Image (cartoon, one colour):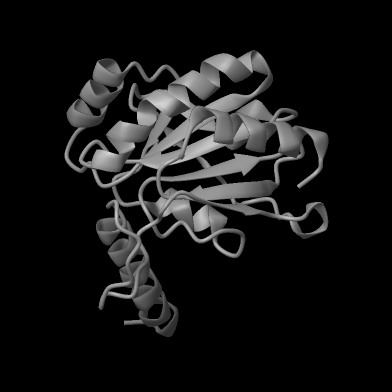
Length: 193
């Protein structure tokens, strides 16, 4: 095995462990080295914001989508799985925020840990009325795009990208309320965070 591959395997294992274990409702640190998100909001000062690496892939419907498709407007990126109870619980809040924010803000999901087929995540979207696209990423590789910007160690997690394509804020764990997300996006739009 090559040296770069040996170095990547521990990183991949940590990421996989975080994705596997992240879904839950109690904020605890376990012996696996992860923290289950509790909906805490983190703001990134304007001068410290970074553009994530490539966020793109095939949607659950098989169409290609990229964060670049939404250039010039804020984007709310939500990481979720159909197997995740808190993801189901927050979906109505995300849909309400998407409706209230309208076309000035884009929403993009990243579906993780739903291997084999898109059947379960598509059923999740239909049942819960999710109308924005989601990248189908059962291995969670897309999350690596945010390394060095925000730790996406819990499922669900939400990231707000500003109109310049930079990571501006995150919510680790379920979105507390639609209003919380709407206010966060408004602050990002104003450049006050």
